[in-house]
Length: 113
Image (tube, rainbow, N blue to C red; front, side, top):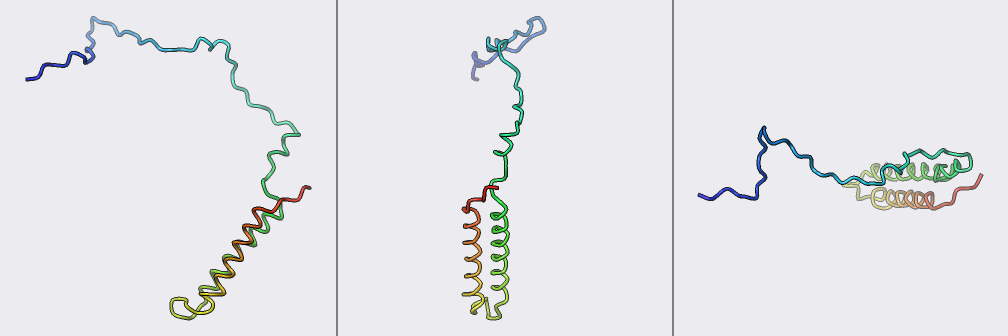
């Protein structure tokens, strides 16, 4: 039989009190200041404005509408598996136009009011 490992931690008995482990605490705790939330002043309020302008959001909504219209056009194709003109040509062109409009809507600079 193998001998018990000597490196294992000994079990505590009732006669032996639990020793407190040394914890590392920063000596700098007395000089710390409590965290305070910065107040929002009126000039910095404009920095928290929306990232896009009204024109950007309307162009994004129009782009989403055009993309959905393109998918609807593709679903109208009467050919088998959608291999007709609507499913292979017109619908994908309309969907791509919607994605191009979305790209433009994201990159367009908002007008300063």
